[in-house]
Image (cartoon, rainbow, N blue to C red; front, side):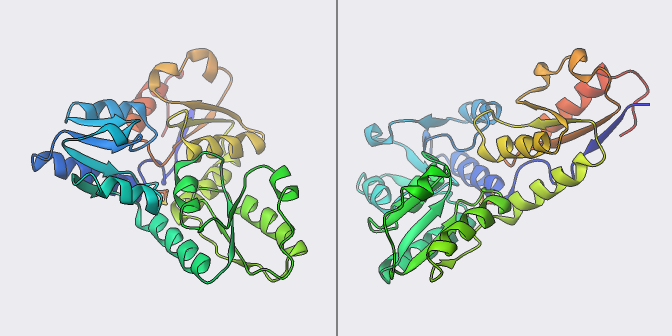
Amino acid sequence: MPRIIIAKTAGFCWGVSRAIDLVMKAAEAGNTPIYTDGALIHNPQVLSLLESSDIHVSSNIESIDHGTIAIRAHGITPQRRQLLKSKGLKIVDATCPHVGGIQAIVKQHATKGYTIIIIGETGHPEVIGLMGFTQGRGFLIDKDEDLDNLPPLDGEKICIVAQSTQSRSRLYEVTERIRSLYPQAIVFDTLCDVTSDRQNEVLEMTKQVDLMIVVGGKNSGNTQRMAELSRKAGVTTYHIETEEELTAEMLQGHEVIGLTAGASTPDWMIKRVQARLQELLPQPVSV
Ligand code: SF4
């Protein structure tokens, strides 16, 4: 009998729930239209629901001259915050407190003269925000080549942080390489537990399942990494956004199916995927 194992950690993280609550409350209080400075979360289905509450994604917040502006969970640079404030519009700050904590570490150490090394993804909004606190002394390590391109930092004070959704193995690997060159570097484990808990659960699940379905926005970094971990563990893995992407062929020959989801995937979407799995699998199905 086919079996579905659903991850306990699947679905919205507290930072995303909080961001959505904050903008929804602002909308309910009549502060509409609300323009979010980029996509509030990496989930197109949730974004289209927010649209119906007069909450819109703006890719050009500089041009907004009415309504309310919302800062998303990823946070922004202090320079951008200043620019938004100068508009004189109402601002809903949905920066995740965990990300706010990383910004504080970067700011504090940059002020003390540290060179800041950020382990993260090029172009990720959280990384862009963090870079803004480095006072021009920040370096991003995304690919391994970035390590080779670091300027000589002998004798410099160095502070290493990571984008909250990086994997712990990546943090350790890069940190070790930097410390072999610069043992004076201090390291802050800035990974969000929400992310590591999900990643650990994915790894645990790969020992029990022969197919993994990871639900979440295709552009969601944390969802992509969960799928990547599962693939690396040798399990056939599909990263889908909605139940409509599932086909009977994808499930053929698989007995134990893992179902998990990124931090920006709502519960209702996980339930829809579960229902679709139950429809497509040979009956009966145990969950
Ligand atoms: S994954 Fe963690 S850091 Fe990112 S928004 Fe959620 S709670 Fe905040």
